[in-house]
Length: 214
Image (cartoon, rainbow, N blue to C red; front, side, top):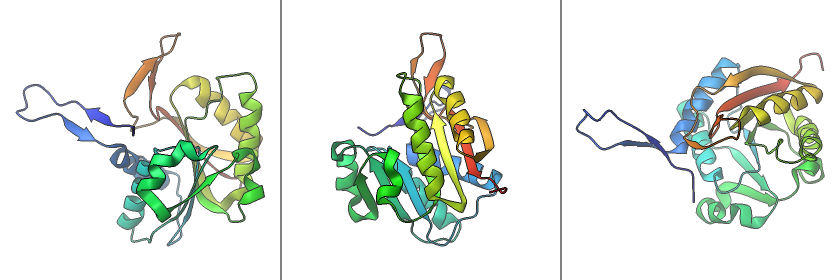
């Protein structure tokens, strides 16, 4: 099932609840943060979606809307996840619009030869197990290698326990954080942590670029 988000309207309004699908929400995110961080894309940019899953459907649509709205062409979009099953539904829908790869993101440079202007990473599971920070550090190191000098990493988290270590690990790779904080356009709340923090899709956002000193 794809993530679907509801936007409530006041009871006084004589209309049904409005539905905002994740592609529209992500279009707002791209518009807000790519412009704020001065990210300028080529006419047909390369996009890498790490851990894409089936939600790549919404991410791809948002990217194409953004590019069309800025007079740019279609993206070369690559979606990566650890198994074919992870993106099986999306692959049936998107077909050849997205280049799907069932690979380990710890080894990006083994199977990717191009550089990408946007690398999208949603909800990295850094805090779920003791070995995850080490694994994600390796993924971020590989990400930095395939990132275009004029590109950016967009990383979102649903709680602080992933957001804070993600920033530290990205900085450890030599990337510069150009924005870090609460996302202006988070998704719906789906749970609450044992510490009482509401968990929401894309609650926090990081934008990272290659350092100008490199």
